[in-house]
Length: 119
Image (cartoon, rainbow, N blue to C red; front, side, top):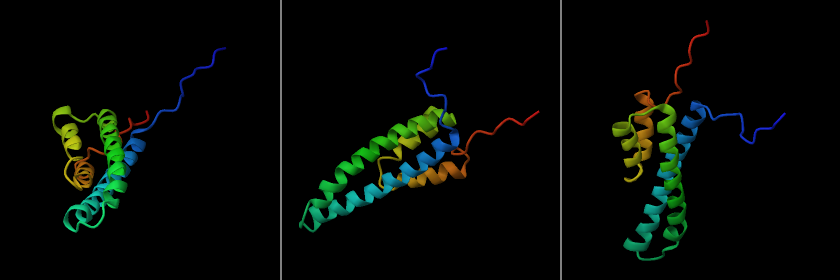
C-alpha cells in the first residue's frame, strides 16, 4: 500500500472566491496606505516612513492579488480577453480591485459554479 505525497483535499471555488475578495480588499487598503505615505513624503515633505512601510506591504499584496486573480480566473473559468484582463488591470489604479470585486460579484463572475442536481 503506497501513500500519496499529494494532498487529497482541493480548494473549492467558494474558498477561491473568499480569498480573492479578501486579497482585493487588502490590495486597496495597502494602496491607500501607500498613497498617504507618498503624500507625506512628496507634498508635505516631512517623512518617508509611510512609503518605507507601505511600499513593501503593497508590493507583496499586489503580487498576491495578481496570483490569486489568475488562479480565480481558472477556477471560475473567466474569459481571458475580458474578465481576466480586467481583473489584472484593476490592480493598477488605486481602489480599482474593490470595484472589480463588486462588479464581478454583481454580474455573477465570483460565484461558485452551480452544483449538478442530485439524481
